[in-house]
Picture 1 (tube, rainbow, N blue to C red):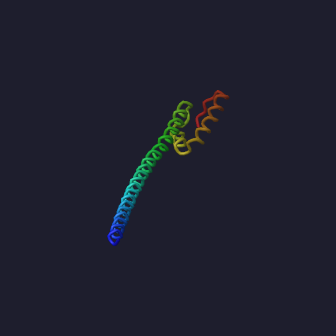
Picture 2 (picture 1 turned 180 degrees about the horizontal axis):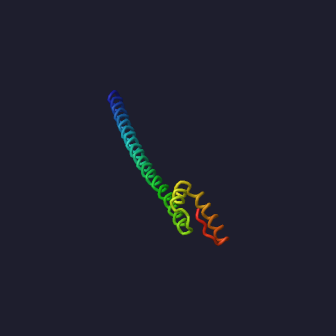
Picture 3 (picture 1 turned 90 degrees about the vertical axis):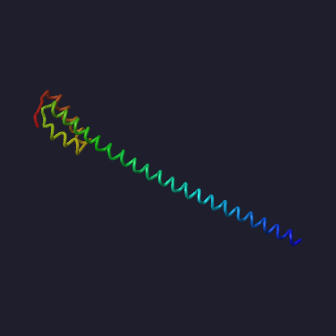
Length: 112
């Protein structure tokens, strides 16, 4: 009877040790995965910042170039309109469209 109790105790202890080892392995795997996910999130964030920072500057430059081209074609100061388009983007283009509409109605090309 004592041997059976000792055997059951040893088996129980062995199972408990295996479960502890399994739990430790699972925790290590989870920690490794958490670190990998954090690293991927950081890389994605850096790439996102690079993409968004470059896009805004390029769009602003294109607004400025468009305004300058329009200004040259209507005998206006191209540099003034370039910098206005560069700094005030959409507002400048709206003003440009209104001025262009007025120019077409009057048929004049005014130098400003």
